[in-house]
Length: 211
Image (cartoon, rainbow, N blue to C red; front, side, top):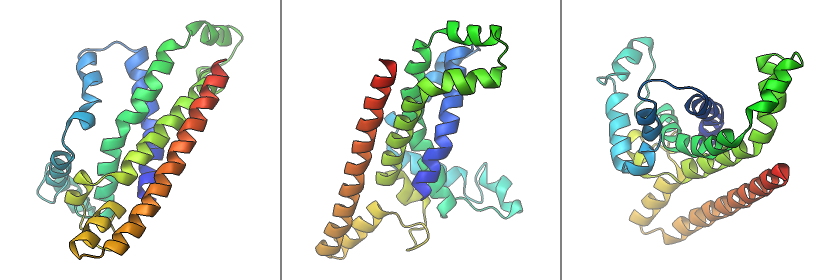
């Protein structure tokens, strides 16, 4: 559920980020564009340690949230933050080339016919963009579900609270419960296969829409 919520949020934020990178020129745009790929290059353990430090009660952001009674590090909210960080590039990099290939003539025609900017985005831009958005969300969800390195450091790993399946598998192996680890691994494998099938269907839908 946490991975699904993170992927859904990134579905909106990722489209907005991709839109800004494609449609607007601003200072340090290339640096910002390159920073989107940081979760790909950054070791997951470093990402988890950084998030845990920043969002701890003595961290830069955690110290501001603590007086409000909001605790991020070592909670399920911290797991969600880590999942948001590692899965955002999948949406941005999937949507960005589609936006770059879209022609502005259709938008200008819609404006000439009296459509507002919101109507143009909703009825002209979004439909051909939707397959790429859903593909990016599915890829981000798959990455978030299987994430280990960053989450294990930012979570308290308490069962039924913020203990994720990959960490649970590792704990079972430490306890020499190979059967339990195998069962959890098989379930994760089935989830991955379903996600991959969904991604392939979405990509086929996108190609058919382009055709």
